Image 1 (cartoon, one colour):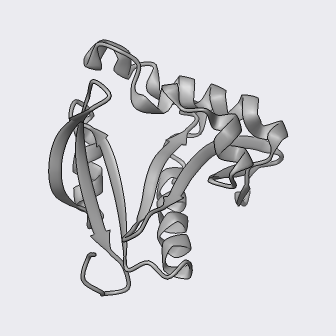
Image 2 (cartoon, one colour; image 1 turned 90 degrees about the horizontal axis):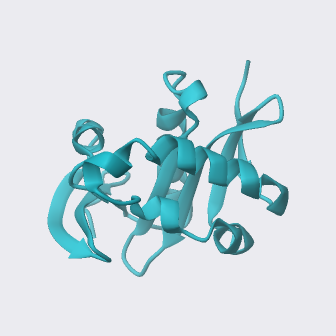
Image 3 (cartoon, helix red, strand yellow; image 1 turned 90 degrees about the vertical axis):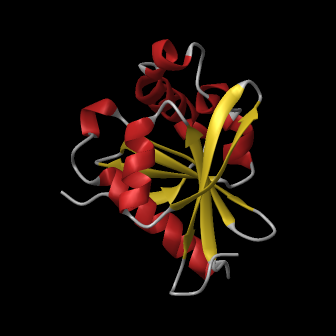
Length: 155
């Protein structure tokens, strides 16, 4: 029962959209609108090579969106199908994101989440991310966090 992480391809687009929809829909009531990841253009992100998926037996079960930036790798989105949650796929994808950032030469990885997603903020803090700032962008109140990689100070 091994899971495989690989770059997403065009034929994964609908599965990626479905996972994002399923993973974020329950936040709509809490936030008052669709969370940012529900608004992204996954066709373009896949074409740019930004999306990694985790699959098992050919079934896409989660995804990761990484965007290189000047001073850190941005973990732009991570989502796991509700049916696959609790199997450690989120942690596997987070570890993969950190490995990809190190391989690309980054000393830190950055992410943001909505301030209403308090369970996400707590999880990220537990695994080494530190809050850097809060800001309102595109009508969403975001919490930015950063994690140093490989023992190096955060950029």
